[in-house]
Image (cartoon, rainbow, N blue to C red; front, side, top):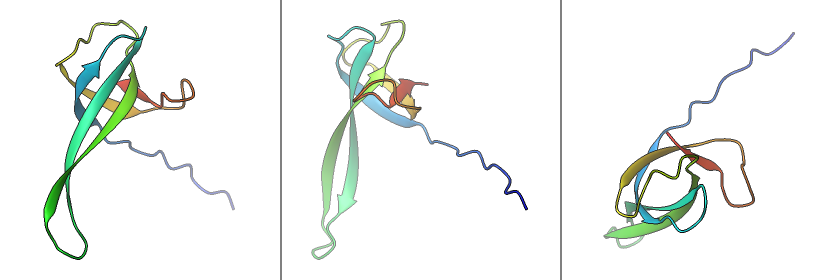
Amino acid sequence: MKKAKVEKKHKNIKGIVVSDAMDKTIVVSVTSFKTHPKYLKKYKSTKKYKVHDAENKHKVGDVVEFMQVKPISKDKKFEVA
């Protein structure tokens, strides 16, 4: 019996461009709030992603939405949606 191929749906992530110095790549900072397991206090957590920007049209300060794709390079696994 063959299993049906299930297509994964990747959710889009929204963040702010913090660097556009590289060619066809932007660095996007995503901020989220997490809750401490013991003290139940909320704190801010920031993560940076290298995102593929084929047209080099996004500049520092822009809000962009990106999604996960197959690896483009060692660090880039995301592409502007």
